Length: 346
Image (cartoon, rainbow, N blue to C red; front, side, top):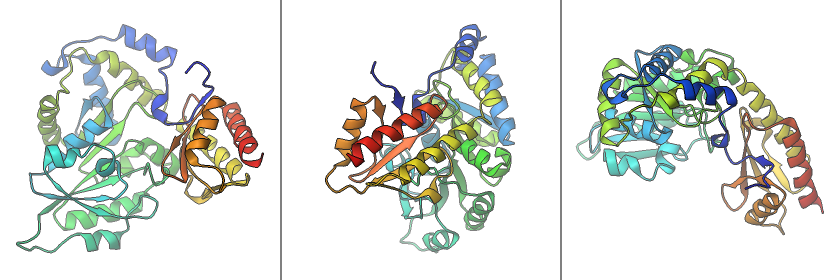
């Protein structure tokens, strides 16, 4: 990896900055399973306050947070409703089936977003043959929708439909702060209608490890027990929490820089023959680009970029995903566009 100049695979590849490392080294710690780690406690209190909810729980990953949320909200045999490309359904190793034992009811949305009419149609009437729908899971921003944002009004309407039919609402908010920055509203407003929210510290916020699960005190007390069951009861975890506190207090507003760079990349790609970008869907820090050059395979393009020191991920046989983050600069974007143009136009 020594010759890699630009890593656009994901915002998970960010490295902790020197300030984070110093705070981690000096963090006051204790045994978190006993509730005695003061830095973890501070992070959980800060997270709950930021989202205007009663309580929060530090978890090792977004996947763990989402799985704990499903376990906490549902009983075995229940139905949960999700968008078909959502991370909980498609990229968490079937955990909802294996651990929670729930039936997924998937909706194919538009760029990862479901409409109110789609949700209404997906909620089945009471019938002896049907499982009981108890949970709606929304993803904001939508990863495989290309970083698209569900607005406050859209969130509230979907939540009202769900709750009117007896469903709880969980938000996979891995990048919920990106959504709030894009909309220029407090994140607490964006999640006010949700019963629980998971958000990642280790993506655009730049911390090395961890996510937060946020909700009511009753929800978090139950979730804490599931975290222990899944092996997530950590000990002197304040070392990790210190980085998360710094990220929440200092690095939220700078997410706009990532969005600006993603926009620059998208506009540049749209001017290169052989590759297509839907500029209208580039709202935050993710760019989906479709290869239209017929004599070049996506995997070959990924390999050619790697040879030039640029890492990206393919989504399918035609699509590449680029993700900007705090370790990406304007010069990195310029270099990436230059290399892609050389490959596609040569």
